[in-house]
Each structure stands twice: as structure tokens, then as C-alpha cells.
Image 1 (tube, rainbow, N blue to C red):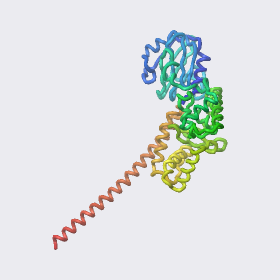
Image 2: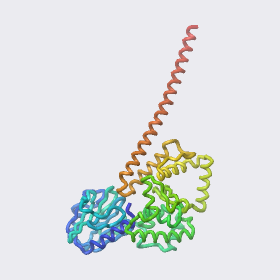
Image 3: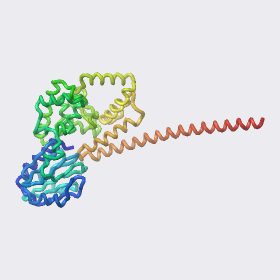
Image 4: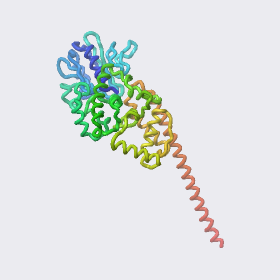
Length: 402
């Protein structure tokens, strides 16, 4: 999923290759879900003959300033990407167009040819992106509703401390809130919290002064480094290991196990040995662990989640005390995989589908087993009922005979 580093890499590629050039041809896809609020003809007519003056970004949004308005704006969504023919835009995914590749791609939503022959395209396979034509993109939603940009408008240490101390939600959930700080997505948040040694579920308001300092430093360093290496997320420990989830291989960071939990509705990678809950949250977590060891019901839900997480990492089902009836833990895992598969880049599509198919078959098996058990119970009830009726009839016959 493109985040600040990927979108910034696209902005820089356009800045380096397209500024000062005139648009001689424009093709807009017939896709009103992605192309928002403007017809194809009007969009194309507003681009042709215009010169690209500058490229801008805030958070995960990019827009081009032409020599006169309106200006094209791109909200990248889950799989939005800029491709420039002959130029490797980013290392996040395949970004260099080869002579043998389909061009423009069938997933192209906006295609532009410049006066020197250079061509670029905005593509979106899953159609969660939005392409707009606006007079002033920065002054209207969604860009006007964004918080300060994590790279261009970083908070000072004091500003971060003051704002976080008022937020009683999980720190990762807050980092993902684009109205609080824009540009940080799932893998960047995981990396920031790993480097800062902060548990993703730790309440923002409960962080120590040391945590605040480490977090402020990590946000700056991770974002700047990600942009410096052209969004090559594989050079970060947590993001590199995050992809092991889809291959169901055990993940480790410097010999330490990496686990997966769900925070703010997103699959989250963290290292339990280094990222620990503190204060009252640590005490509550310890109490839950104690309950689970005693076999108390309070730990049932956590056991299922843990089992699902371990299954994703290690590729095997581990039996645990206090788990829900067979099959429910696997359904939880299947739902999480189904939701999170949308966040992975296209290279993982077939692998995700295979995992989902396997989970579906497993769920169907469980349903069949449940049906068999139910049918057996119904059969026993029917037999018992028949015996009762027969006994009653025999008794009546004996009475008549007397």
C-alpha cells in the first residue's frame, strides 16, 4: 500500500522528468469510481496544451500544478502508482516500464504524453484511488482535512508531547489517523514503533518522556531514510518480515521473534521482547495471562487471537487451552487475511488467494462436521421419540386385552 515514501518518490520522479514540458495528449479512463466529478472529455480538454509547472504532495496525495487551473490531483488509495516510461520511479513495486510491457497498462486511469515524447501514467488495479480535477487541490478535501505532513511539517518534540498526552487511544491507531499526522501508513507505523521500542497498543497518553523522545526521533529518521532509499521498504526490519506472513514463514529480527496482532483494524508486526506494554496496561496484560493459565474464561478470546497470529507466522495450528470450539479461530484468521490482502502489493495476489481458498475449504470442512453432529443428534432424538410412542402404544394394547 503506497504511503508517504512511495508518493514522495513519484512526486520527485515527475519533478525530475516532466517539469517545463507541455502536455500534447491525454487519455482518461471511463471509470467514474476513480475519476471523480468530471467527464472524460472535460478532463482531457483541461490538460492538453498545458505545461507542467510543479509537483506537490501532502500525506499520500499528489497533485500537479499546470500553467493555469484546474489541476489534476491523485489520491493513491491501496494500489495507485505513477509510471514514467523509461524511468524507475520507486523500488516499492515494479516501476520501470519495459518495451515488452503493455503500455499504457489496462489499469491506467490517466495517461499523458509530453512534447518531448516522454509518457507517464497513473494506474490503479483495485480502483480504490481517486483522480480529481480541481482549481486548488490543497484548499478542499481530502487534502485540506489532513494533519501536518510527517516529512514536510514535522512536529517539534514539545508539540508531539503535548498532543499525545491528551490522546487515550493506542499509539499505532493515532499514528494511522491522517487528520492527526499525514503520510504514515501501516508499514511505516510498525517500523517507527519498532525503532522507538514502543508497544503498538500502548496508550498514547501513558507514554513516558523517554518514549516521547524516542518516538519523535524515530518518525523523523524512518521517514527521511525511506524517502532517501526511494521507498525500498525491504530495507526495514519490520516491513521485510511483514511479508513473511503471506508465505507463512517464521519471522525474526536479530534472532528475536516477531509477532502479529491487530491494532486499529490493521495487522501489526512487533517484537514482544523489545516492545512491551507498561504501567496499568502491563498489569492488565499480566492478569489476562494468569487467567489463561488457570483456564478462566477471560482468556478465551485472547487465546483465539494468539492462535490465529501464531498460525499466520509459523504456518501451523497450535492447540491452546481455553480456545473456542474448533474452526472459530481459523475463521478469525481467514477474515483477517481477507481484509489485509487488500493492503499488499500486487505481487502477492495469487499467494493471498491460495491462502483464502485453503481457509474456505477448512471452514467448509468444519461446517460439514457440525452438520454431521447435528444430524446425529436429531437422529437420536427421533429414535428416542419413536421408542416412547411404541412403548405407549404397547401399554394401551395390554390394557385393552385385560
